[in-house]
Image: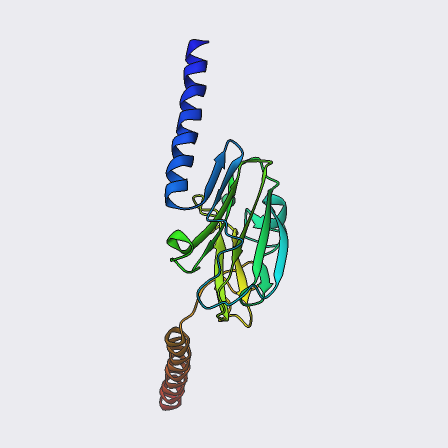
Amino acid sequence: MKHLIRTRLAIVCLGLTISIFAKAQHPMSFDARGLTMNSNDSELPLDCSAISSTFEFTVHVGTEYAKQYPGTVFGMSDHELHVEPCALVTLNFVNDDEIRHQWMLHGLPRYLYPEGMFHLEANGGESRSGSFIVPSDHQTYLIHCDMTQHMEKGMKAQLVVGRGSGDLWSIPGISREFKLKPLDSLLAVLLVITMLIISFLVWVFLNIESAEQD
Ligand SMILES: [Cu+2]
């Protein structure tokens, strides 16, 4: 019993310490159900004079949403979100699984979002909400779950602000699995042409040989 009380006390102290520390560093709320980090619904990015529009999304995550994408284990109900530049975005994150998941957005201005990140995390069966304001650039931002192997197993998405800056690779239902650099594509074409030329030369050589034998 004493051990249980001591453990609970330690968890509460840890939570309080993290909350106090986080408050001193950047906005973060933390409890037994999950955490919200760097939520911001009022401070404008330097390149925005006002909030242009507001968007609210509810994104569910879990194994259920991976079924339609072969080779994945975890998925999201939305692997792509579109918003306007300088928009205020509210994200309601619902974890339908029994294990912990995250909705992490990268590439935001670091002067406003420490590490350039907005982060929601929900324990199994829990939900979490938060807001952020995007800059004015037409940009495509990475969204993922940072739990080990979750991104590789399907928990990858993108936020397209305005016209975006091109699809990220390996987004289920959006882009192909592996990124081919332009140079890789060129090398692949050259390799195929070389193989065709070699095959042709071998065929000619074999024909000459058999003609000589006749
Ligand atoms: Cu996850």
